[in-house]
Length: 298
Image (cartoon, rainbow, N blue to C red; front, side, top):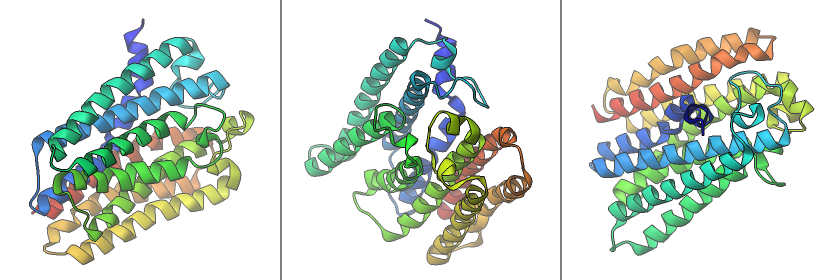
């Protein structure tokens, strides 16, 4: 078994984006006087587990459908034959088991025996996260093939990640937490939209009806501007609601490369050139989460 191929299938470059919501939720909990390093570390590892599982499932699902036979960007392991479908299914099972164990430990550390109802709620949420990660491209009703991937990313990378992690610390929901949750969800969705714009031609051939395939490249660009600029507006609204000092505007640094990125997208006419922009948007979102968090606790 080629370990390097599985590392490639895990797509490590996607991990900073996946933990961005956890970082924001943790910083917000710290700002409100709640923080626990055990919860933080376990939440990060749980999220990474979900992301790796999603990447494995995506590689497997697209591989057996033939979607990745011709594609831009990094090669996929199942379609290239470096990992067999059977081996990838086993990797998905192992990843699921390990992630569930970490998630259960996280739930126990956070809620203990005193908050059994919360424990059940988050266990169900974990099962839903695993199911959503797998069903993105696997199965006859894979929603990644019918244009609902954007909803999945917005909900799980934004709302669930930020609000869920905040709740693990505080055992309560504060309305202002929804604003950065929406903002990071929009930025995460922008990464997916960029990915789908890059893969537009191949996805059409493979009958993968992403939102970009459904609305076309011109509307997809406008949708992309909306996602990034709306996240900026909502972030500024969040600062306006919680303002205490000017350090809170640190997050604007992360938007400098994002605004430059939007200009590139506007002028770009070749889908394959968007591949290099994926890392920029993902890392900018990661930087955004750190700077927004730091600004809140100063």
